[in-house]
Length: 424
Image: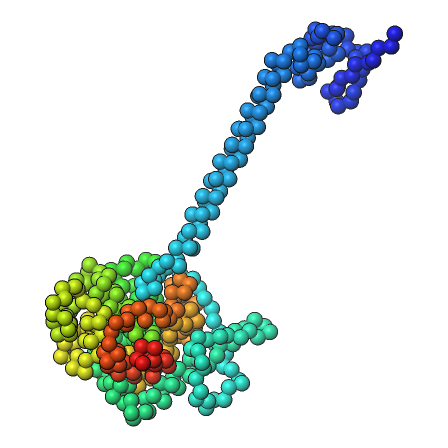
């Protein structure tokens, strides 16, 4: 009678029959002895499932339990990875929600090379359609910076020579102006402060250059504007001869912004947000403006932008300015702050193109290898026409035209377009 041989898997992976050395049965099955020796990982499968179902099912259950635990650990690890990546990404995402008028973050070194454009005529007076520089790349990767900075200075010289605008473009270099100019003797730099255009960050740069603090991150916020602790001398603190020497030989710069958008920023910062360490804006200056310029005397709300516009556009605003003292620096004209027709500045930066202008200024001043301007959140310096329209909504054309008449010199000196969408 022919009997089919029973095969087994040897420890070395080959197959052998039961007749080749399988002398001791491993289990008693209804169909005959199992050819595998005991113990063996295969002993649960030597008999048909009907004979020992509990043993087979137990092994399957153990395998499924192990497999589920393995998948659970993988899922848990994946969840931790997603959470970690979200935390890292959120640090960059939140930058876009910062207040455009109060920004400042980690430092970042930026490098920019200015190369004259040989294709332009030296005497060319025509201004570019946009103030934003648009660099071109040479074959060796060097950036060619347009002549926008030279054209800005040329525009100032032309407007300063315009007799029709003399009253709006000229001012005496008084103590009020000299108080606005901060000095860095170590690197021969003069910086004229124009509030509400990111000047806090520039003051931090100068504080580090003067050696008062090792880095921008180390400067406490309450020290930046404390001129007894920040190590920034004002130009007014020097003798007349020393003042003239610095004005003639030092690198000089300041930053400007669309005049009306700057006024909105000043109003928001001083009368709406009103930091607790500056209570006099809300409790002293605002009531003075309301008493003189509010038309509806029954109105009990705090100061409104309309009241602020009437005050600034009033030709007789100066008597009220004298009562407010130096607090007016946040909304007086750039002409009154920095005297651009009387002082020959080296560079005029624009808030709208600060991403390009800041590294250019640092390079021109010869300090780009020592310090950097704090990182600018994307889109934070872009001109916001919608915001301007919103704030001027409901204000009479007469009041807006009077306001423009006062700030016309700033618009023309620095190449900002006349806001016809508000005036007409």
